[in-house]
Image 1 (spheres, rainbow, N blue to C red):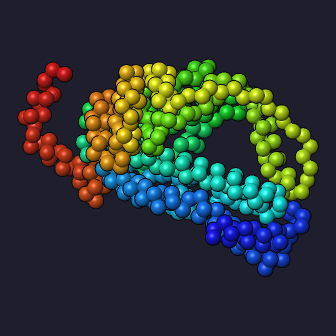
Image 2 (image 1 turned 180 degrees about the vertical axis):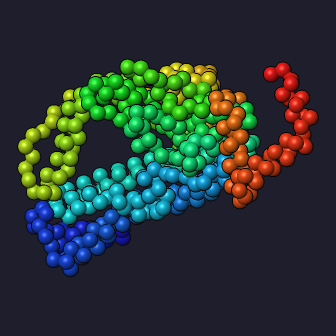
Image 3 (image 1 turned 90 degrees about the vertical axis):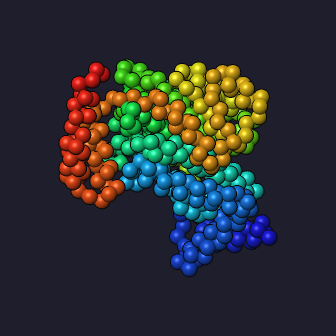
Length: 424
């Protein structure tokens, strides 16, 4: 039924589409064309994703509940998500329909056939579903760990406005890669980076060549550093990355260990700034030329692209060998086959599997992270952070909190003197 309705809508769209690219349509006809194109998109989403969408909505519900709990535990004022994830979480069906916008118009204009639309559109929908569900699980793991740390006294100290950031890009345009979140525990600070390192902003060829390795390097799910690390990039002519204390790789699929990934980065030669912009303009021109009804004047030739195919378990080990963290941890939603688990553990990877969405199973990971906490901020700064958090939690003025602390110090003056006179 869905495919037949899609075909009928397609035929109606072809009849309503303008005879020439960019030609204006009467308002009534334009509205009717939009309606049948919406049908074309809706029916393909129904055909491809009707079974997955209920699962997606369950994951979104769990994710949003975890966002609330983690923010409260850390004393955060709120959170920010990437534009992609925010759209998916808000309405996964509508988000998937947006992915078909260009394909649907190409179909209506006869640029692609119905079979091509079904093939390309289905691929785009599956990719979007996989990507967003992977992001949700990865973020849920981070949030669950942060909730455990918050219950042990952790306070969000970065970003300074105390809005938890789960965004991946756009934060490094100033030439640094700051953490998504940094927390302070009684034992010290921890800094968390999601899918880093990410490329830095550049202005010319010399900048691009300096930062090229950040475009093509390996990018684990979560990197964690002890201390307040405001920039993971090491200074120098060819920037490198600080050695992380812990890497956490998250696997949401049941069969993740059977999958492979093509690594092109290590084999990619640096582009010049001119080549980069030429390829960007070529892509823009390619997309607009047909819509504007003009002829393309040139084609940028691309050479063969080398790559190395790696199985996912081996990629986890590769992350460990490449970055040499203090601890390498794999968190798997499903159970990991015994042979895969043995392979990873033989290479020094801690495996936490069968987690599902049970945050209690990550308490041990929170304990491991706590061991890497390191004091890098002055105690005065930490006292200010604790006072601000208490004031917000109790909805009182910070001055009242300071007065209460002073009264407690006066009541325990003798104990305070003994602590100050004791050897460090």
